[in-house]
Image 1 (cartoon, rainbow, N blue to C red):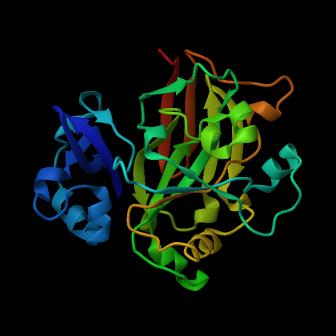
Image 2: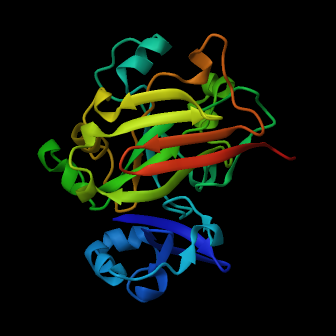
Image 3: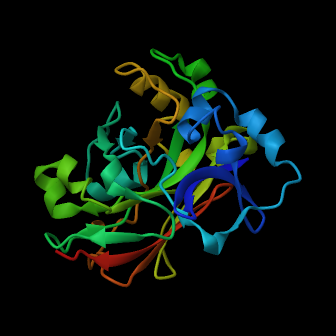
Length: 283
């Protein structure tokens, strides 16, 4: 099942991604949940599946504006730094026994097909395509053996990174307003038989710049969920972005940074493609 957040007819909504459009669950589940995070918290995914069975889309794709998967202003996204061996090698990092973490703030995220903004403050605007784990069940100190039970599904992140700012502040370099994107949807975990078999491909203006099996992560999905749950109680709607593979722009020779007019696509097998156009910040 594919679920998404979107805006249509001036109203924020959530729904099911169907053939040719979106089925609005907001009205069909009115009074029971207000958004996708609450749908997960109240364990209503199965109910949603029954409601959309055999139903035609309420909105065509060209009639909606995609929102970040979780558009709440208090949404939490935990992000891994150097999490693939090939990316570790291209950055010259020493072997790490534990993940390096940072946070993505909600104001840094836009939805699928929305513009991502190259800040006026920097020309070193880099791409990172990533697979996102979406938490569906709350938990603290989650054992690895039970970790997948807490994962509702998978989504995609463009982690827009300002490399010069990142050198002195990871928080700043990763959180410029509207510099990253999240979506277009979440695919429920039951549709992905083995997370290791997913592949991630990033294309800049149609040219492949990253490609990796998700199974090349340095840590398993189960360990990542377990690790983060040791320092915080994970909540439904929380997101964990699992880092990027090799091929980022600042490690190329010559370096490759994004500019206005560029089109960035991140495709994850079984999930879909997150696409955004780069524009310059207007001050």
